[in-house]
Length: 468
Image (cartoon, rainbow, N blue to C red):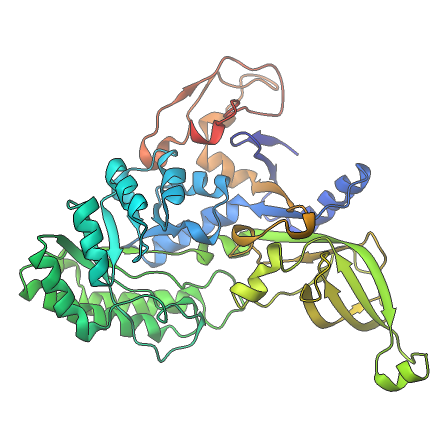
């Protein structure tokens, strides 16, 4: 298997087109076992991110994707999306700094936090990150003092009668009936408001939520234009599904959104439309594999406990990642996870099972009950769709390490993205010049000396390779 360094600390292993993910997981487990390692690890499919970008461009051609960094700030993911030409939704100084170091133009960044720290507003001003959201009067005074030339976007509260995984309207958003007064205050302060944003909530469960929010935005657009603002931006926020099997599909959302956008914001209005997808890009790209580090057999019911025996045993398995780590999504993102066996025994009897994280806290439970065959310490479990709101909020509570990260991609996809980097001059020889992320934002090339025969291309080699 060939591999390529996509920045320091990120070796991307390439494989044949259509190779099953479980086969890749099994190969990585075998590799770990040869090294006598039992650590939890992620397999991140960068090709999946590329496919999501292509699907977005095909199904929502009028909407520019501004990736929500908070969802998963993994540096190779940010670097890849920057190369593809995505914009970025940033919520803090640190997030802005991360994407700026990839050469992303400030016109492709929106500071989409309606309630910002003063120092962060000053930082945005210094970096000339002009687009930023607001939803209250106090924020306008802060912006007036720290960044009077900002291009402001009023975040409104979308209709709330729809199912969402995580509610955001309880914290952010100006009610549309209050929009006129807030926009008049912006006029009084001589601030430039350029458009409207909304966010239906993280993990929207009904496609109609987007249509209703677009309609509400159109009404506030009319209010702003009647007051003399030259509105030219609509930000439709996030909430897009990130993997198959959810309440709705991305195709459903795209169909509803396109109809609403064409009705209320037809091309002749000349409005720039952006979105803030997070989980859409990364959820299905990340598989988490954990090792069973301990095991207990327990009675299945109170009667069996009293008799000190169990007709059918139940098992508690303890694994090396939990709710204080990657599975924080169970608490913060209201996620549901599914476990599968990496090497499943054939026709094995299944038992009632619970799965627990490694810390000393009784809260650290991943699955309360699932049917699995009897497993052994050292066996592995795999959890798909673990890219959204997992690594972003994981901790090392109790001294438990974060999972190691491994990256892979279909060779066809990688060659399409970086064709010049993979051209060979004879067996095992590589061209001396390798373009570095030029497609997305016209970044500068990095010149390299001819490397010796090797299956590895060094795209970066210095300590701050991701940022140069």
